[in-house]
Length: 96
Image 1 (tube, rainbow, N blue to C red):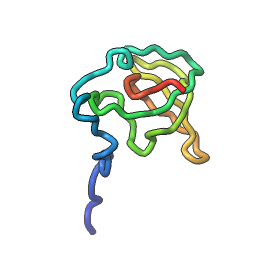
Image 2 (cartoon, helix red, strand yellow):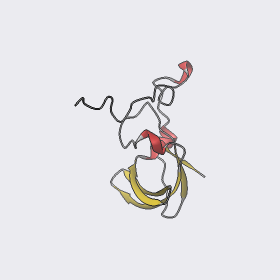
Image 3 (cartoon, one colour):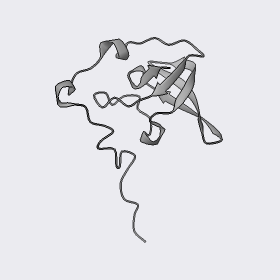
């Protein structure tokens, strides 16, 4: 029996690249963003920061903020019919 190929970042080359002019730059406004409970947000991975990332299959999903935990936020999303909770750093979030 062979082992499964790849990890959680498999097939994300296009998703996790920035334009050449923006590479290495970190948006301080998004890094320090403050959200309140009940805010609607969209998940968008920022490749400059590795902390508080979520699995790439949830990119583009919309959810609501349930609570703040440390520097990250608990996001409630629906994966088809199953409700899920993700811990995400604010740099990977955008307001709806």
